Image 1 (cartoon, helix red, strand yellow):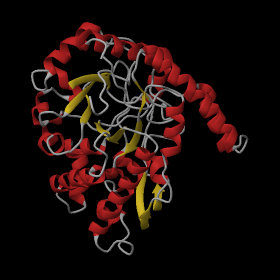
Image 2 (image 1 turned 30 degrees about the vertical axis):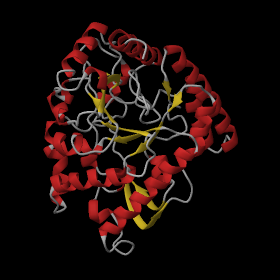
Image 3 (image 1 turned 180 degrees about the vertical axis):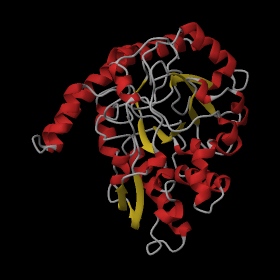
Image 4 (image 1 turned 90 degrees about the horizontal axis):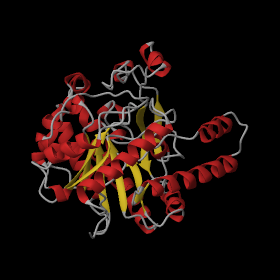
Length: 388
């Protein structure tokens, strides 16, 4: 294939080893220098790349080991930005005992979640003219690629992260009296970052967007309605924005977009199938493939896949990262077969439903759980498509 596409893929973040978590905490406490932290990150990335290779993955990630969470490091690297605490109405749904449906109590972590656990994403405010002083990810990509002979993938947060919470009110009217000038600057930032990654040798870039699924939920759409906007019109604008951000990529660069429902400490934010946004998002985004969340009832059925244009590929996120239960291989094969009624089998692949650690703390599973699930993905991909 002229563009990277893998029958067994992964979303990006992996559980951080305790040594790395401790090193980050020590750095934040002023007890470890940035160079020393970087050394621990380098060593941890080399090790996790070897583990991915041993599993059989032909595409590898750095686990997002250098990041505080999946989006904040990139946004913090822009000029004209301020990051503030979010609002209680934006809190994630906490996982409960037995949410995974396996019938087992997963222990103290779930008890803690029941007793007031709450994750509220931070909000982004544009306080001045936006800019990208330097590429945020090119150096990290170069290091990752230097550790492997496999294809290295980098992830970027969606441009919707810069606007969704607050909309027009989150963007300085002094800096941007015309909101379209704001969107134009966002496009230039993403084009510059993608070009820098391509210059570094990157040919597979994944955009992560949990915010488009907010438009599935009446509760989350209410935030937009309260601001005086039409949610469907804003969603269409976000699709246009994303398409503009990726429009100048090289012909050999694959862009995949991961559209999920939120992920932190096994919690989530949105529920419901893709049907409500299928025509606009699945039918409108000019990406090479989608990575879609399909691990449980919250995700709905496969019928919305009918909206995906022919030739655009779909990576089915059938394996949950939220709970330890290991999926049965035969069940995964059956679900791939069900999806093939809407997307040709040759245009399908399999992956986890989301990352294992969108935030530093990671989901409520163990490293052994994580690697068993990744092994299972390789097993099923070989069973369905052979060693492709």
